[in-house]
Every structure is written in C-alpha cells, then in structure tokens.
Length: 335
Image 1 (cartoon, one colour):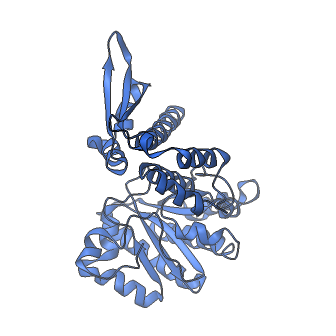
Image 2: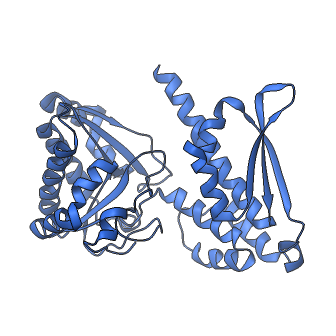
Image 3: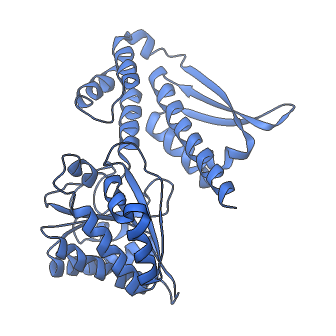
C-alpha cells in the first residue's frame, strides 16, 4: 500500500492499493479497525484531519481503501507508525476523540484493535489478572477474538466498549504490550499486513493459480522462507508448474461442484452477492449456487472456468464456507 496523500482520492478510498500490505518505516506500529463513519472522521474533509494528526503526533497513518474491509468486519484497517510508544499513545487519544465525534451521542463507545498473538498474552496477564484489573478500573467491556493463523504474529481482534476515558486507558495498555515486542523477528511482517497473514498467503496462492503456470512459478519463488507456507502449498505449486499449456488453456474449460448446507448459503454468497462476485473477478470464473431437487436442506455449488482458475476459486469459496460455518457455530454457542 502506498503511503497516501491528503487528496480527494484518499478521502474517498483511503490510501493505497489492495495489496494486503502497507509500507512500514518506523519501529512502533499500532493497528485498529475503523468503520466508515470513523474512517471519514479520521481522514477529514480533503484529508485535513489525518494531516493534522500526522503532524501533531509525528506519525505516519494509512487507511485501507473504501470497501477494502478487514475480513468478516465492516472496518477499514488504520495503521499508525511512529518512532516512540508515546507518540502512538498520543495518536490513540486523538483517535478516541474521533470515535466520540462519529458516535452520534452514544454513551457506550466501541473500538477494535488488531494485536499480535504474543501481545494478547501480555495484555490478558497471568490467569487473566491484567485484563481483569483493566475491566475493574475502567468499567470497560473487553473481549479478545481467536487468533487468525499460527505463530506469535497471528492476528487477534481486541474489542473494547466503554467511555472515552476507558478506551484511552485500554488502548495505552494494548500499545504498551504491542511495542514491547517490536524487536521480534516476526513483528515487521505482522505490522505490514492489513489482512491476516494466512489469508494473505491464501489470496496470493489463488491469484497465482488463476494466472496459470507463470503465476504459480512466481508464487513458488515468493513462498521460499515464508513461515506461513505449507507442504500442501508446495505440492500445488509443483503440480501447476508441471502442467503443459494444452491442459491449462483448454478452451472447453473445467468444472468443480460440491454440496453445501442451505443454511450457510447466504453467508457464502455475501451481502448482495459480494463474496462470489469478488472471487469471480479475481479468478475469471463463473460461480453458481443452485437448488437440488428433493433436497431442501442442501444446495449445489458449481464453479466453471480454466483449470487453475477453477481450482483457485474453489479454494477461496471453501475458505468462505469454513469462515461462515465457524461464525454460525460461535453465534449458537453465545445464544
């Protein structure tokens, strides 16, 4: 992602391209989610607000593009970076003021922070002592999501609800825990991503497969030394590299089908069909979900297109399926 300018384009769409990463040049990094109302308040008219925050905090601030939301949320990713922890504390306080501004008079404010797994452990504390103390001192409701991916840099979502003062106190503690780890070898990779690392790898793989053997060859080189790569990915890359052109480019195309539960179809398709449309655009395939005669509980998922593109689309649809299934099970457990 480019650093972004305080232009009309930045005001409308944030800063940069949809690469899933942003450029990091300062040692201290703090990431959080901004729903559209908060993102607009942070950027300001003509980019004036974000420019003022950059200047007063001596920080770099980037916002992902409009519509480029963190997976399974309505929030754009805001990345703040500075030379000191204190500068990011100042940024957090200014952001909380923007939360108040965009809350339309609501008493209970909400905020979500992206935190590496290792920092969440310190934030919670031994036996939950630290997070319990924060809850009691601030009156805030604090919850942590499951890590996305594996390893110390796996991303977790920390959600906070409370007063402005409570949010400030919690965010300063989160920032303290995050910056205590900024010298770790995995920190730079975590700091630079605006999607979870495992989803970034999956997206890179799908895009490369959709591009055919040339794309998979490029991916194979980029995966070297990637801690999120796996033997199964290596196998797919080797198979794709070994396929001759007449297989990859067969004009008849290929098809993949599977059966999915009817109750998950809405989440699988996405709001207004956004989920399947995005995957079709990325892979150049056609995706259809049809009724199955005499089986009201199931639907048929059908994907057609060039071989590698069809495989890539299937992988992305199965990721959506597993995400929706997990969310459904979690919501049932909370009810």
